[in-house]
Length: 330
Image (cartoon, rainbow, N blue to C red; front, side, top):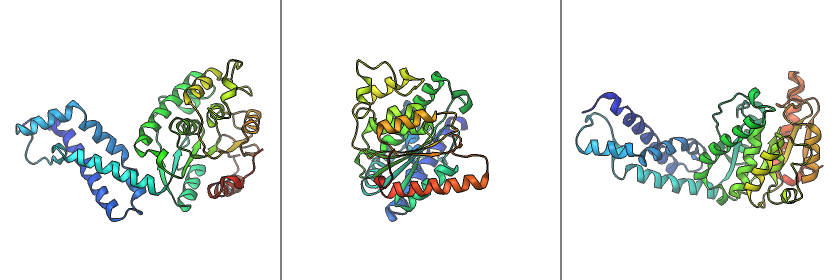
């Protein structure tokens, strides 16, 4: 019959399988109210799909056929059509959600997760405006302090985040959605811009405290294409990571017809020089909102001052969500 350890993964997969089937039933009964909740289960769907496509599932299926799995272990996950039918229904549900709704994707920073003020309240504003929220998560080998001013680790962190974001977003096919909003923070702004160009999602982008590389990705292929011809020797406005910038931009391909992003920067941000932010936003015609003496979190250390500044920032975010051309460029 095999040991318990031989069957623990089957029990785990069966629990995920049952949870997703239940969520699919719930979505069918309430397509509007359950869409955001359903999207949160996609990491579990991916795990089941990976299991289904692995040699391990085939081995478990054959063990079950031989009667080697205890009868008291639920194993609908091992039925020949079970996972296949669930995956097919998942694709249909995702197509319906994306095709009939507005989608906002939150790209957090390395140490600035989506429950911190800028992303938390921007996410709520987007939801109030009728967007379904998708939150990206990353797993990094380095801490934020170990990445800052280290071009190699910054590049590695970007590549990791871009790969993980792509894995999480690819099933959604956002290029088929009529209204996509990306909300990024720090390195998440670079990942959002890169994903937008790679997948032609046409997303509007809220850019909180960008890293220098973000600017080279925001308009890659259109506004920035001329900067990377044979006459170009590096990224403009003093970027210290020109090799990284250029390779990512060239890989990004042609630009898309997305609305212009809006950028928020703190003048005391140690991750991005203010002159660079001003010059690049002027160059690209992007709205730039600077909070004087604010750090990489757009905070100054005084609670009441930070709350007042946050209200101003979020007021601009709210205007942009409603109409991206209601805000002025530099």
